[in-house]
Image (cartoon, rainbow over all chains, first blue to last red):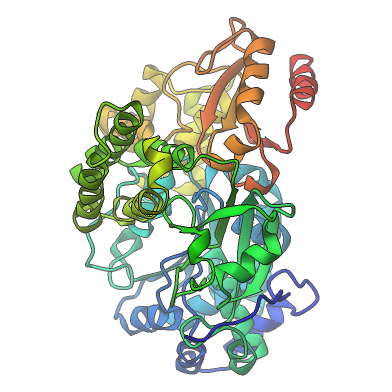
Length: 388
Length: 154
């Protein structure tokens, strides 16, 4: 497996690197198929966590025969430990808008939405100001496309793409069955491209700086760089853009406090990597993918408390629509509490792991399916801490 | 205080008459009146030609669309792991002592409500709280006292 050293990159937050209207202008001189093929060639995968190839998403939506299509930017950044999209929207919003505009040109959409989580409402005034200006400029360069910002209201599950559509349509944010996928029937039942904030920025950047420069970074399976949100027991918490493909070891050497015992990669719904696995775990799509959340825990922390906090989170944020997730989350939480109190034997953890596995298969959306990630990785690696 | 009908007119002129304007409408009412009471929900239902159960069901899905009375300033302290590790419990205790209410309650003068929230997206600067839309990070008990004082004087 290809492995990279830790390398800091400055593409996303660079303010002088590109004029975003020029970027769109340049895109408009090219054929949409060329832009999309270049994106596919770049190997760019979605930066929200799931990692679907962005170029393919655009291609599928472009190939749909429909008068109305939509571009949606997922800014419902709710994953615990993630805060990079807020920073991107706060400091370089026009890069996001430019990516959306290029997407609109490629797929033939006239309307775009940014779904901003309610917790980030303080950004609204400033963001709307910048957006009004951008919307005007984009018309001036000859693209019939308008972006609008809509606010969420404090529901984690609305970061799931189909739940986000439901919410935009004015309904409860309950995920839909897939298929049909958003590229076929998304917002208002129309073909829709929905990408993460950061993904849109990279699409604009690839279009501007060329695919070769992007491909220089990262590994075969994880091209490019990515913005990481670093928190927990670290002397330098914050937001860092890093080349993909480094090991957890390299990451901990840079960000750890010398006593790191575990890193939670990918937030509450991600995986817990214990110290003994730092060296052979790659952060990227060939190892553990992440939407950018990196939480470090040192030896003073109880992993029982960490898991307990995550499970409480899922119990509250489960939308309640499907039984495996609604009941499963609660039972996992009750289960570890019972083991901790000594009411259940240690072997009960095996039963709970089976329940988590079942949720992975049976839950309707990514929320319920991914509860098994933290549960099994923490229980397997820190069993003593859960029991005693 | 602005009437709900007025708010609805405004929202509809901006977002249109169809259901996709429902969330902006509910958000606007909560912003103005701090929560959604039964009469308002009926009013919204009429405006969008929906059943009031449908509107209520939608509103109660969302944490920020409160359907029980809340204070003018709703404080939401982040309780997710990073903020837990940096001392959110102390922040909550400070707020409880200061406002003389417990978590989940509203002060007698209807000025403050004290709630918790899941990850607010400031994990590198915990502990964090929102007061309505404003965010306050890197909190210490001393800072909290100062912040609340400034709101009490408002």
